[in-house]
Image (cartoon, rainbow, N blue to C red; front, side, top):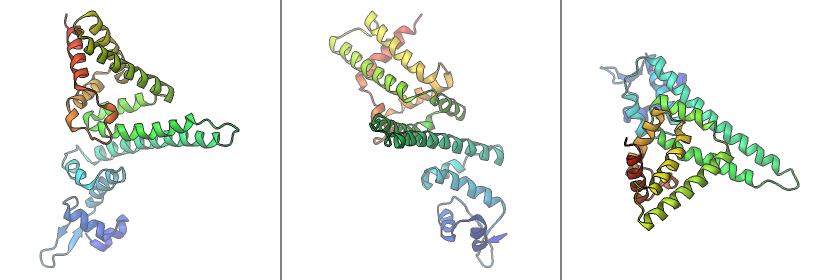
Amino acid sequence: MYRVQQFAALAGVTVRALHHYDALGLLKPLRKARTGYRVYRDTDFARLEQIVVPKFLGLPLRDIGPLLKTKPANLKDVLGKQRRVLWDRRRQIDAALIAIEKAERSLDTAEPDWKLFTTVVREIDMQNNTDWTKKYYSENAQAKVEGRRALWSPELQERVSRQWTELVADVESAIARGDDPKGAGGQALAARWSELLAGFTGGDPEIQQGLNKMWADRPNWPEDKAKGFRLPAEVTDFIGRAISRSSQP
């Protein structure tokens, strides 16, 4: 048993933080019946670890509570999951650092490559815009998405973004002409759409399932981070009907 001051010193946190976690119901110590003193046990160190790791990753405390209500098989499962999350974030930071170092080195040349600075912005912005999507994927699918992200060079990202922009414009033109989604033109657009999606999913059904969940939840996407993902409703409706037709025998 540890009094609050002892526990705070051993864990490397402040007493104020422990009181705050207690008030939020994240880490509830025992209270001695006669004195009312807060006392912590060795197992509370593991509970505290489950709080500080997602907090370090930027998750608000109000969102950590529901995560702690899950019932993992054992503490090893919890630690393993958090280790994988930290490794994912480390890879993201390493990619951003590499982009920044290249931009720095270019400043030492006679003609700096300003495109490298757009790479820095794109790398960081892409990470900010994809973190919110993870909730739609299973843990296994998240690992697969992270693995495929390593295949995406800045040049490939730029090319795919351009292809999506061109495709959406072509779909809007087809809608303006009154084309039938089930006709030859609509089916050609559906094929291009499916091909671009396959470039992201790699044909993996688990990734596709998470992607489907994300698109079904469009009204709840964060406004500040998902603008680049949003598509006009008439475009998704047209493509949805076209793909539905192409999937029929």
